[in-house]
Image (cartoon, rainbow, N blue to C red; front, side, top):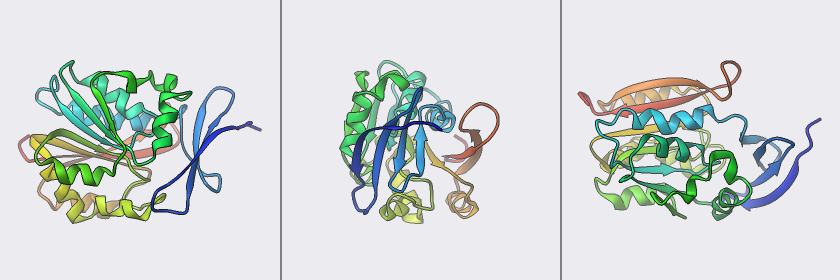
Length: 226
């Protein structure tokens, strides 16, 4: 049986739930209160994809400005940094300060310590607030703030996946910009909601680890003709 050593616990704002960071023999794990594993350093294929898929759809990623909603274990951020140039700026919105501390501390080596990159700025803030204040500021917005359209950790995250939430994200994009959403499971209603905006929508099923087992969803949405 896998032995887990707890390294820290953090309350989830707007909820009665918490996150705990654990270390096992070879990996780190973040579990929701009650014991459900939300993410691990072993299984991050879809988190990588959330970073590289939208960036590869930009005409010129060299000086891209990217907003990531949710730091997680840093893998999406690391994937974005690998795709954009030295003049890029990447803003990470993370609601839970302890998650940032974990990534700056023992967890950071697993993803290559992307928070140390000078192109990165972390905001302890709701990504919806940053989008609302941004104007047309970003070339890519990548959102992984919960388990997807069906909120799991915090009910407030649902608004990001509503018609109003999608519209707010589009307003925060520059011309030619790209939206990307992560989900643990398929959601045909959300996919249809995205398509109803007139954007070109791609759905990608990505293995969490290797080439078999659990698959997660990435939706990438762009304006027609882009």
